[in-house]
Image (cartoon, rainbow over all chains, first blue to last red; front, side, top):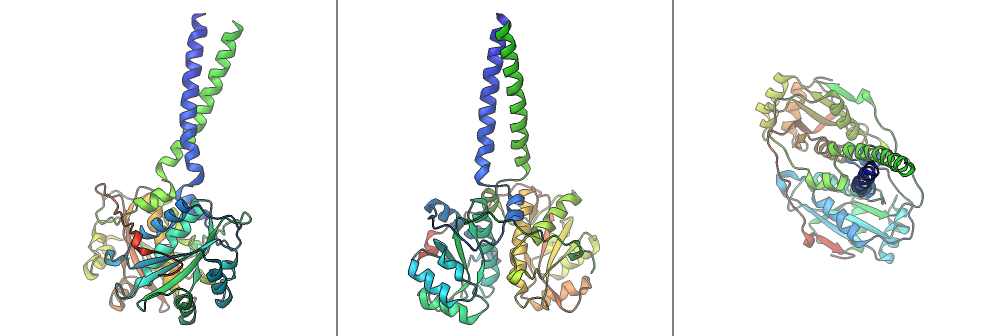
Length: 197
Length: 197
């Protein structure tokens, strides 16, 4: 009888420990490990109509602003576009941007050339943060370049009334992927050099 | 007696489940969650002399090559520098690069301008992947710009014998941080615009 109680106590303890550690594991389900996310990220160009939760959009923007920038000048600005007409118009006028017709939102990553003359580098790091954050949140996204193409940047200026000193680096359509996609394995050891070429 | 056996069986089952789920949780200890890593990343400029494990260096390079690139041209090349004399010389001749004197290694992120005329954007995404991978592996790193400064890029060309068509975007000293550092909170909601400026 005594050993029965002992076993029961032990079992309860184990159940609690299991619940605790499974809870911790499940928290990580939505947000993958960093290295895993970096390898899993892929360009997603087809989306479900399902809208994106506002908290997730905010996390993407926070991730964008957490990038490093030269002299910490943070020259970035972000435009969240969820107006269907604007998304469709940009999709029609930009090359390689027809995926904007499917995505519920797009984030335009812009830079202030008055704040930094190499704004496009800081904004590229910021865009990469957004792409990784999207992957880790179960969202799909793709870098649609506008910079360094004047004519593409002009399309953005036409539909989004941005000041003269603001330029767009890229448009990132974001949405829930319509189908699961594999990431590419791009590892190429011949591109690694040690101390000299 | 019967219930004793039942309890014992239950206890063993729970122990196994606990070991399994703790194993999964502990795997995540070294590699933080993606969003967490993005927010925790900071520029580290002071390092312990402790060398970096080769597996970690390889993970950093793999992370660098997992970045997206325009038309998937992957114009990047990486030079791992662990030669003390080369690191010290570059530290002496480059502005804002004296941290190379302390770091056990540096990764120079380069691009091939013959492969892509906007190599520096793809390489910026690649550099950001390396910085995030470093943070997630408990390492410290910092983006030390060479591009778009001709005179800095020439210093790299002087010490690393790279071909004419290869340019360096940045030098990333990497090492174990000499002291814990806080990341900056750079969230600024005034930089978010919706559909128009």
